[in-house]
Length: 95
Ligand code: FES
Image 1 (cartoon, rainbow, N blue to C red):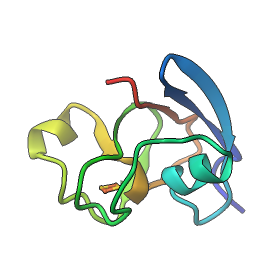
Image 2: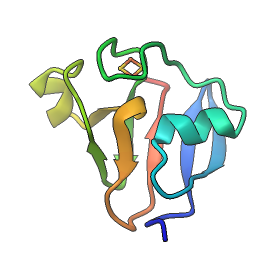
Image 3: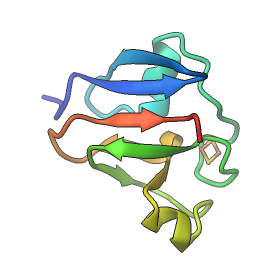
């Protein structure tokens, strides 16, 4: 069972409710829902999917493209982020 069934995503001023399956990253779920979220490498290297985690908790397999300062500020790489708790997630691409 997945920790959450959907999450909130803001992109270009629009709010979406994105269903997410167990084991999916936030980026995979967004793309599967037809949302054209920014991405490139999908491997945690380029930083294109950098977004702000307004609420919730994620775990990142690889966060090399994020500076320690960005991490402190709550930025995440959507391509590496999976839900880490049952707290509602709100991911914001409008930096
Ligand atoms: S798509 Fe390159 S870091 Fe996420």
